[in-house]
Amino acid sequence: MLKVLQNLLDLQSVDTRLHIVRARLAALPKKTAEVDGRVAAAKAELDKSKAAQLATVKDRKKYELDVEQWKDRVRKYKDQTSQVKTNEAYKALQHEVQNAEDEIAKAEDRLLEQMVAGEEYDRRIKAAEKSLKEVEEIARGERAEIEKEKAAAEKELAEGNTERARATAEIPEDMMDHYDRIMKKHDNVALAEVRDEKCSACGMRIRPHVFQEMRRSTSHEMFHCETCTRILYYLEPAASAAAAGPVGDPSGSTPSHSEN
Image (cartoon, rainbow, N blue to C red; front, top):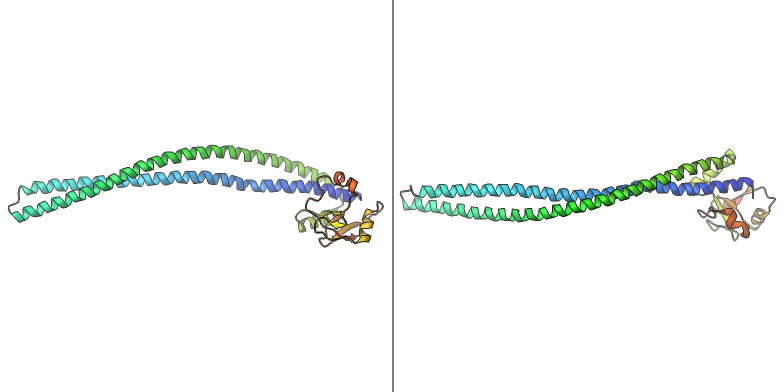
């Protein structure tokens, strides 16, 4: 195998690992947002119950005031009954008393409803507070794990970038430009192994004379897949697994035509 081809294989192995690490890092903000979302939802539920309880307290005070106002009217009307001179006036005051007492009953019913509702919201608040505490505790653990994952990924990224710098130092600049162009075109995979005389990525069959030339140890040509343009490499079956290492077929590269 050409030395530059082996160098490109080494580089692709590094780039494959870097691609995975970057994907892990890119996914972390979403994980954090999901954790924050659960905490926010629990807080919103607590705030909702507290707001409902506050509204109930305000309504209860209003109905308590209504009851007292109507009771004052009843006392006022009853006091006036001893002062009226006619039967009609007495009946009118009695009617007003009855109306006021009916309003007292209605206000007291509404007051009772608000008191019952207040007790229910008290229970909801306690449950929501307990739930929020549990969610926050879980969230703290999850955030700590996310930070650990981030630190580990950033360390891997730094090490990978250092390793990549060493790998690229062995490759001519024009070949690096060529490699980078293919990488961008094919989802970060520029090289494809030839297996069973086919591109392992796209399945394009390699022309017999090209395949034979690839197998010659004295060949100095670099070959590309005629379909996907990836750089092709071939490893004899006995050496394939060991020599290819983690690259193997990282993305399923594709064969190409030979290129001098």
